[in-house]
Image: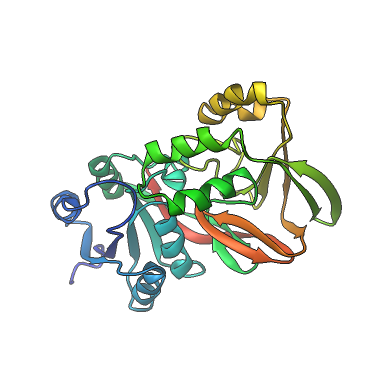
Length: 297
């Protein structure tokens, strides 16, 4: 590689993300990527956590760009391997929800995402840590966590499966009591949904934190209060149409360092992937800790 302007890039494909047919991905990348800008290789993940190891190794070997081809879980894994380094993270969305890509205005059409990458710019974004674990988009401990755990066990992935779970579980799920410390201030509340957001949505344009900004050094905290069952259809509609924050049952506030005070185990999700914690949960923002490739316009 004699041209110093050519960027050394690694494409990491998750063959199990989303519900798309991935057999053509390698061909589309090879045909679509601008070889006058990028000198690239393509690899596949083989097991959970593999993208983190591949991304970290690429950064250590001097790759300037690592592009993940997958969903939010794959973006999380790859970002965890690059956080704090100078290597840039790029996304070609290929998952069920693609929340982070949608927040950054990266096209969800594969070929358009490749074209966007050919003309991208780089910027530093915030990330979060949840009991020390990396998070790039959202962390939830309420209804969204419940759905994430069920979605992980579902036989099929994809948008249709996710929507069916939301519709079937929305009426069954019972709110929980939460006690928190937000930047030193105590709060106690009953929550149907409790989400800590760096980016604005879960995916599939289900916006939970419309004012979330990956550059402001703040965590957007979204709470949905207990509500009568007859308003459930309207709330589902609002969630899928970026107007949930206009509901009387929604409350939003911000913080930098949060502790959820809990005894025993608590289920949650980090970037859509199910997790479980024991005892208190500490959430913190890490400003400008990850470099990312975003559309130029």
